[in-house]
Length: 565
Image 1 (cartoon, rainbow, N blue to C red):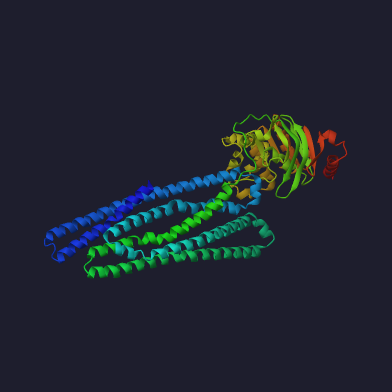
Image 2 (cartoon, rainbow, N blue to C red):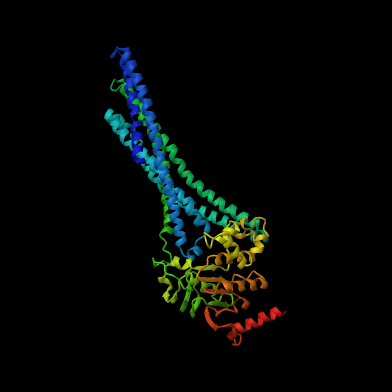
C-alpha cells in the first residue's frame, strides 16, 4: 500500500511542471500577440494557480500516508526481527555463550537490526520515489524534446560508475565499523560488571588507556567509512548542476532559434530539479543498503546457528522424578576436558541424592545434564524410564527447580526475584518460601522489605542472602525435581542446618539433588554419590560410607575435626 501511495504522490508532483509550462506559454502567447484576450489569459492563470495548490495539497497528503505506511511497517518489522533474534538467543546452548561475548550479542540485536530497519523503511520509500520520478519524468521530457532530454542524461553514466565503486567500499567498511562497535560494547559491559575488581586492584588508568585505544580505533574506522559516504552527496549535486547548465545552454539556444517556447525550458528546469533530491539520495540509499547487507549477514550468523541441545518432542509428559544415569560421559568440546566418565546410578522418585567431591570432579556438570544445559557425549540419562532426549525440553525444565552455584538475581524487587519461580505467586506464598529459605528476617530488615529493588546481579545483597533468595525462588515453583548446586557455601553452619531441615520436609515427594562440599548438607540423603576426576568412586548412604576407606571418610574426619576445634 505504501508503495502504491508513493507512486500516486510522485505522479501528482510531476503534474506541477506541466501546469507551469502551460501558464508560461499562455503569457508568452499573449505577449507575442498570438492571444489577444487578456481576460482569457487571466482566467487560465488563476485556474492553473488553483490547480497547482490543489495538486500540491493532495500530493502532500499522499506523502503523509506514504510515511505512515512504509515507515510504520519498517518499525513493526524491526520489532519482529528483534524478537526473532531474542528467541534464537534463548534457544541456543550454553556453549554458544562461552564462545560469544555479551557486548557483541547486544550490538547485533540493537545496532545491526536498526541498520536493517533503515533498509526496509526509508531505503524502500526513497528508492520508489526516485524510480517513479525518473521513469515518469524522463518519459515526459522525451515526449516534449528528445534531444534536450538526451543532453541532460550525459552526467548519468558517471553517476552509475561512481555508485558501483563507492558501494563496494561502503559495504566493506561498514562491516569493520560494526565489528569495532561490538568490541567497544563488550569492553564497556565487562568493565561495568567487573568494576569492583578494577577498583580493588587500582587499575583504572590501565582500563582507561585500553578503552581510549579501542575507542580511537573505532573512531578511525568510522571516519574511513564516512569519508566514502561524504563523496556521494557533493557528487550528486555536481552532476545535477551540470544537467542544469546543459538545459540552460542547449535549451537557451533552442529558444533563441524559436525551436521551443519559454514554458518548455522552464518545465525542463523543474523536472531536473524535482529529480535533484531523489538523485542526491541515491548515495544515501546505497549506503543504507550496503550497511543493511553487512548487518543482516552478521544477524544471519546467529539466526542460522543450530542449537546443540534440541527439543525433539512436542508433547509434554508428566514428570514423576525417577532418574537413571547409564554409562554417562561428557566431553567439553571447547577445552577437550572429559568432565564425566562412565557414570552410572539410579534415583527413585522422591529420593534425595547427595553429590560430593573435590573441586573440578564434575559435580556441577552432572546436575546440569539433568536439565539438559548440555547433552551427554556418551551413554544415556533416563527420566521415568524414557530417554531424557525424548522428553519435551521445556516440559522437563518446567518441572525442575534449579539453584545454581553462582546465584543470579535480576535488577528488580526481592519479591519479584522470588516470584520468578512462579509468576502468579501470592504475597503469602513468597513470604512462606522466604521463611523456608531462612531469609525472611533479613528481608524484613530492609526499609522496603519485599519491595526493595536490588542492584544489577543483586550486588546490594551479601553472598549468603543471594543464595537464600535463589533457594526461595526454586522452592516456590513446587517442581518435581529440585537441584541445589553448592548453594549453601556462603551461609554459616547454623543457618545451613535450619535450611536443610526445612528442605527435608519440602522435598519429601520430590526428587532432590544436593551438591555440596560439606558432609553436613548431604548426610541425610537417601543416596550419596562421590565423584573424583569425573568418575563415580563411591556410592551409598552416610553410615555406610564413613566406614569405607576413601574420600568420603577422609573428608568426614577432616570436617569433624574442624567442627571440634
